[in-house]
Amino acid sequence: MATIFSKIVSGEIPCYKIAETNDFLAFLDVNPVKEGHVLVIPKREIDYYFDLDDELFIGLNLFSKIVSEAIKKAIPCKKIGVAVVGLEVPHAHVHLIPLDSVDDLNFTKPRVQLSSEQLDLIAQKIREKL
Image (tube, rainbow, N blue to C red):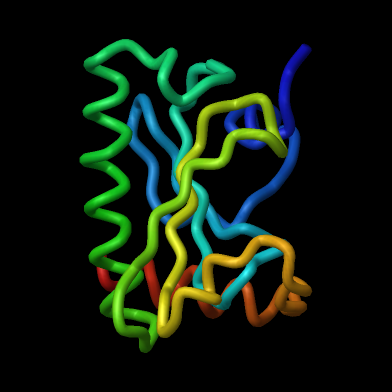
């Protein structure tokens, strides 16, 4: 069964795209823990991050690094945090989150509510820094 991320890759579900290659896709989390929260996925549907073959694993992390540098330039923050949780969607993914404190990585706190216009603007700001 296709995951929500696979449906985003196929275009069945729209996203606020940040960057894309033949193998990877980065897009804004529409239910972010902090403004500028980006998800980075392999396009191939693999459930568990550590089940990625070495080439895909390395590629995903290098792609995440490039995207994180753009986020850091576009969104005022101290650092970009990285989280791999893997419980909410059965498709390997990396969370890139602008950080000003450790609490910014708290997935249990209320999520930031952003309009589609705000999400469009954030995505555009990050894309411009790639």
